[in-house]
Image: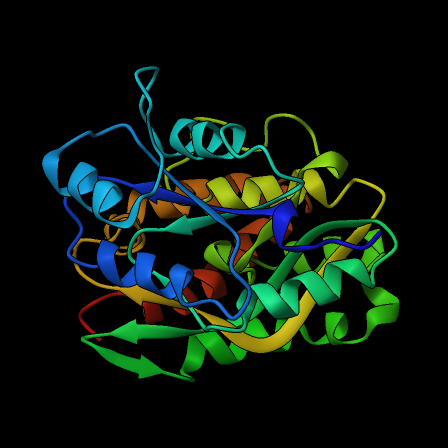
Length: 268
């Protein structure tokens, strides 16, 4: 199927008063191929509303149950196009993200999700590699071969060892996916849980090895907060591993996985 600009929406998930929201918006406006942009929030305030009005972005307020999963589902459901990218307010994208995404999904037979490699943003600096990024790239190495994009076995084996997929880099092909993607309950593994569910579907995980997205690590981010709360992170990681492995093997995995996640902590 041939996808074009009219088929895609960036849905910005805004929360609180992020100092990086403007930078996120401008990276979406600066795409080489312009597509729709909307914003969704469960914390309406003048900061969010002011930026939405300044840039002419439709703003949708979630008056229903709060929580990351509910907020993401709300933004996803308010995107009416065939392709949706949930843009996290602290993160940003390279100008060619949409252009390369449209080309890749159009060349696929039955794409489920499209995602890319990414760099981190720490203290205003772009970090192209560190221990965690190296591990994630190694995990995704099989998907550099297009022949494996449609393999349920390969993607489930990858996910069985952790979550190497950067959530902000993901574009969802709505017509090929369940109506609701994110299950409330988890705080840090909402996306991993979604990938596990989607990985059972017939279709393709389309992986772009170029780093087309930036994920910001800072003290106010949800990633840093949940990692620094070791009990929450360890509990959720344990629950995810049980979807793939017996309990005795999960106990071994946890010893190594927790060390890897420490790379995301702000004290480093």
